Amino acid sequence: MAKGYAQSQQRRVQQPIQSNPLAIKTKKFALEKNKFIGINMMQLIKNQWYWGFVPLALIFINVIVNLTGVYHNYWIYVLTIIGALAYLIFWAIQFTGVTQLEQYKQLFSKYRYEIDSRQILMKLNDTEGGVIKWDMIKSARKTKEGFILDMGQYQFIFLPFTVFNNDSDKKLLDRILKDKGYTID
Image (cartoon, rainbow, N blue to C red; front, side):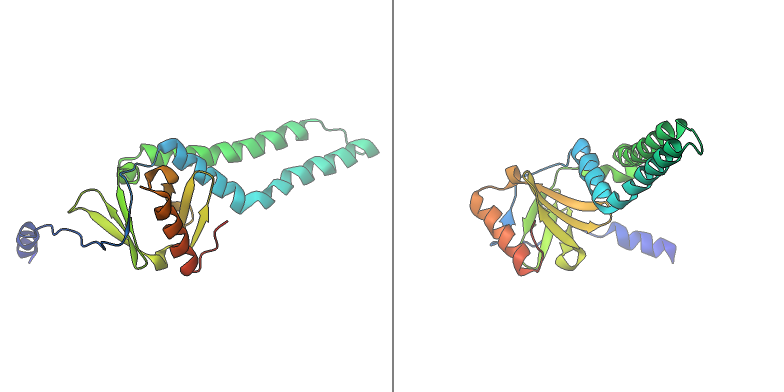
């Protein structure tokens, strides 16, 4: 059984990926590792900003305890700040680690995107690539550098404005995103 499966896999021929001639076609683009880390750190802060009140509350409580003379402790200030910074550094190391692992190498490959109202094609070349359906995109936002299409927690497609061939392609993607129901920030 396994032998037949292996033989049938060897006979497979790669077919050209069908594309829409009216689709937005971008230039080839590879996500930079530092940009990946930066976008993920901003998403982390955006999603978990309220945890910043924990160190502030600890410092506030310690100020009250010090001023009332119940307990004098100055180390809580240092430890609270170190703990908050350690948490941020931990996540920065995690995101940096993803950029170094072999199994995530494809995240930083050069892709050419073809975007239409049905799907997003990510093409390495004319025969290799992948399809992303619009229902996989959870949210979309527009920054000063480009579009970010969020597919889940810390998973995204970043399309800088420089990969578009002209301004009408940017406007068309903006229109597609609005038609799909994504609110653009």
